[in-house]
Length: 92
Image (tube, rainbow, N blue to C red):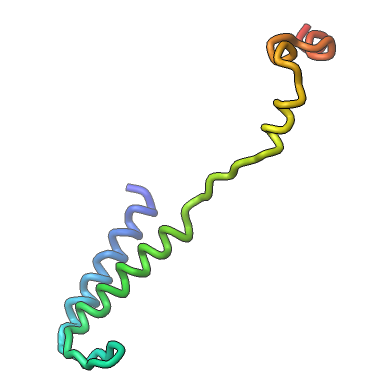
């Protein structure tokens, strides 16, 4: 197993133990109401929301370059299929 897999397993076990130890009810103030809920539920929901936000923010974005489209518009269609003299000299 790789170090990444082992570290994920260890973090998951530690998180599970942490959640299971904190099960007593706490008062949760939500806007105008106070609701007694389990710490397990509050911490678990915060972890899930944090994971979702981190996933959305951390994923790579697709980059669209209009520069490539602009170059293709100004080149004649036949030049895409033929090699230039400089390219032919380089290949041979």
